[in-house]
Amino acid sequence: MPLDVDLHLISPEIILSAGLMLILLVDLFLEDKRRWLGGLLSAVTLLGATAALLSLLPRLLDGPGGSTFGQMYVLDNFAFLFKLLFLVAGFVVVLISANYLNDGVRSTQGEFYFLLLASILGMMLMPSARDMLMLFVALELVSAPGFIVAGFRKRDPRSNEAAIKFFLFGVLSTSIMLFGMSLIYGLTGATGLTDIAAGLAGKGDDPVAFAAILFIIAGFGFKISAVPFHFWAPDTYEGAPVPVAAFLAVSSKAAGFAGLLQLMFVAFPAQANSWAPGLAILSALTMTVGNVLALAQTNIVRLLAYSSIAQAGYMLLPFGVVAGQGPEVMQNAFAASLTYILVYAFMNLGAFAVVIAVGRSKPANLISDYDGLGHRDPRLAVPLLFFLLALAGIPPLSGFWAKFFVFGSAADAGTTWLAAVMVINSVIGLYYYLSVGARMFLRAPPEGETGRFSVPPLVMASIVMMVIAVIAVGVYPELINHFSPNSTLVASP
Image (tube, rainbow, N blue to C red; front, side):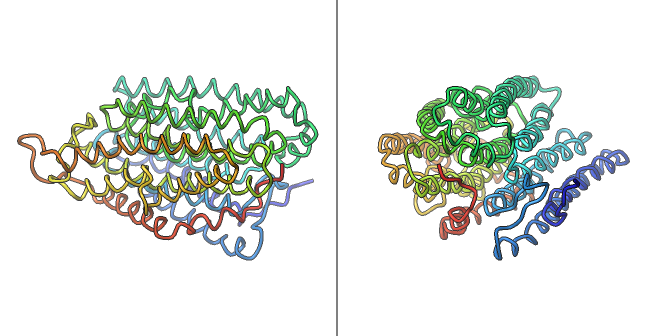
């Protein structure tokens, strides 16, 4: 029997699909000097998809949203927030990529934007997927273009190394995750997330179920760069084009968490007593290793890479506090993790936008390049300090509220040891974030370096957009958080 497809519900994905195919077609007939039109078409496509997504907002305000493809694809508050994040982040990455590509790989801009939109299309599917197979296909659609764009500077050995490491670790994690999914299907005979939850409801201590979930967590651990699956991230971020590093650190990580949230809280709530303690340990290790190794970095991109690993540890913390807890604590933990992911995206994108602006004149991206930046170019130094303080969790910035909600989820569950680890790591993070700030404002610029940097208008616009977003959430944290607790996504354990 044919499926009843709701075209309005999937209109953002339809627009993205049409736009990326149009970019690939138009690029065939463009001269090198006109390939910037691919960026313009990408921006228009993302704005069109955003408009289509916003047109669905009344359906969320009036009811539960909707579903299609036999309930394999669902629109709810959870999916709406993530889709909006991916579209906004994609738009910012397009803005900060334009001049970077013009300065370096102009002849392949069309392919870059095609791959970028293809990855965003996979991200758009991820939070709406309520079927394990659709989740897998969406996740690979996110990852596969990333393998290519990470090595986009073909003549740069570091870029080649970044791509091959990303690819090898990615393929390995995919095979492990798929093996775990196959075991789940063998146990339940189902691929729908709610059907899987029903099939596993009476198998809380089943060793095969535990092994399957362990394999799936390992697979997603790579996607979110959690310890010990993080080895690829610093080298890949450093070797990839900086806009790609920003995209991987924000959008790709958020997509991984979107899938992990659904699997843990929807498909496997009955096994929470098994997987939550392991994720608690994983959270503590991830935030600790990320923060400690960030202290030794001399490259700003690698520092942000280890910072993103540490931030993944904070995002994982709510997963680790739900063992033996009731639906209310599980719902609060889900909401805390969701809020942190969304807030983190704005802070990190803004920091990478500043790095791109400085990197046009200082391509080595050394932390020492930021000495005296506050005296030389406050337009860049002040926003970067702002983003770093937000990442550190200084009140009343949005990063503080993100950490506050995560800390609250640990307090509600009585997991005091994990909350203590988070506090200690927040202090460590504050040290290296402030170290960069001290270099910018307490040191003089290198001798002979005066005058402001040449900052492309699109990059400056991206920085301003992210500053506004971080301020907005800091002033009114419920701007994001009021959506997530009302989500009907979380199942009772």
